[in-house]
Image (tube, rainbow, N blue to C red; front, top):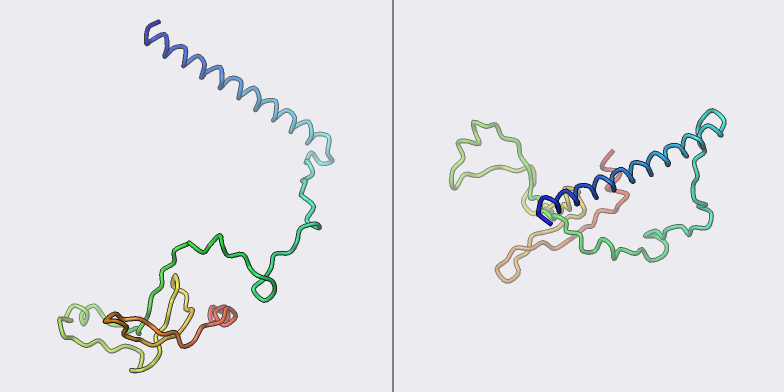
Length: 149
């Protein structure tokens, strides 16, 4: 058997599979149309699972919450010392040693943001010649929601 015959056989097998799938699809559409014709108004009734037997999901205030699924999801934690608005002319004039005034006072707590959402306040610390932050205040979920609105 030559290579062309093998390719032709594979092609024929694929075409037969497609024809069989299209026939199954056509049968399914006919069944759906027949069911819709039997119901009033030409629509079939939706079927939903019984929700009465399911247990309510535990909340943070009640039972233990299962967080195992999301414990390894990476998030971005950023610390914001302060902000300022500056026009492009002044931005282009900055060079080494320039001082940019921020909207915070010295000693004021820094904002801790997780994926851009404020979650805590803290103060800068140095541990083994590396900068870190000591959390001084955690923002409650209800307070976060209140700040959104």
